[in-house]
Length: 66
Image 1 (tube, rainbow, N blue to C red):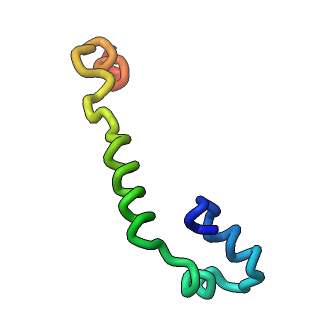
Image 2: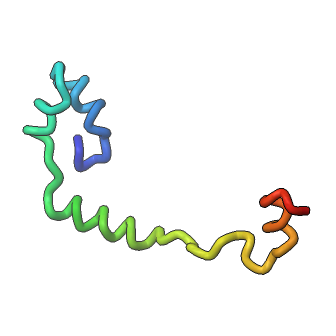
């Protein structure tokens, strides 16, 4: 279920565990899941440039100076 993308809290409910820590004992990510997660995170790198770059009027307005 975890490999299929089912969230751990849902697996906990399905198995009838009272505590998610119990579910964590049985459900752990394998190497393939870790690799795919890293690749997915690397491919979704956000644009770190601020949206106001080069817009001095917007900066002054946001700072309440205009």
